[in-house]
Length: 369
Image (cartoon, rainbow, N blue to C red; front, side, top):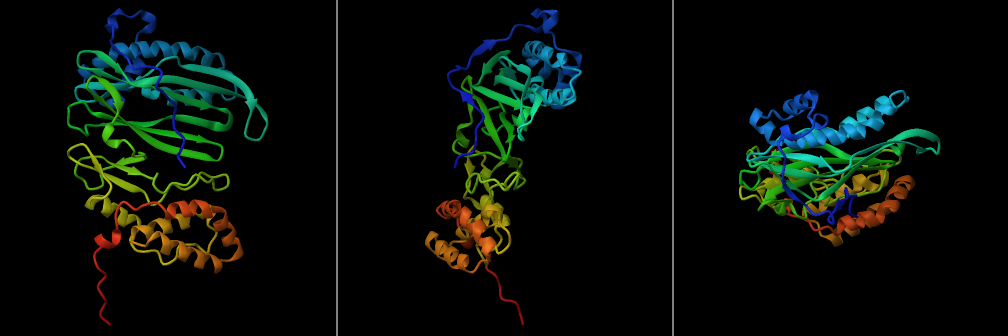
């Protein structure tokens, strides 16, 4: 089952525009000293790099200050500190220009909005809360000061129910070695009995901002330089993802995660020797059993065992047969958990492994008696 996605509105066409010089803006739209200091500290950019985004940063600051008027009106509310913290977290990427070789990345809001609201929380109680809605786009500002705008993205935060969809981290790496670093955006989405974490990978190529084509079809969840070659590899949990909740807690992440090894030509591989070494750490040996005899919340432990068995060369038919045999021997409570997750587990059985660990793992040598 696909995981939730932040909304991208293709009807909002990307634009390219030259940003007016910062000196031409009004006093009300100038960048605040505090914001300049935050951007400089966060990016470690040189003065020249900061100047590249200075005009658009000034415009963004003006928009955010206008939206903050509503936030300031509620300064005496009991949840004012929480609201200020949420606003700062959501808008942080909009106040930071990230250097990217021949240009810089920044998130430009179109119509940021903060609103105090009254509604019912998760337990049905009427409470005072707030909503934050920010629609915008990632923008690449090139060396000539032209801002290249990507697709529209919606970011939201609701104090009622603690629902949030926001940027958690940003970084840059030049995957295709064209001098304009790709933008890696780490996102988080959370709500009642739900959790989602994912990433986006944007590139500036041929005069436009677009998703990085070499990562098309890969659900990005984190990046890591697994083989220490100086390139950021992609870790994805989507192949064995399960969306079922475990009570009131966020569900465990899809396991085992799969590595997409970053190659020098800008592509990624989920089946080369580096990707295999990563999977071998997740599944070091064939699982002796598939179904746990302990309390297995919605079968998550069983899901990983099944995936590892398939990665170690077991056929889908043999895994299904083992599962039915083991189910009959489980205690009643454990059997109840597995019964509830049976359809999801069967879907994992059918997932085609990207490689076979049995063919790559070193043989186990017999020990001397």
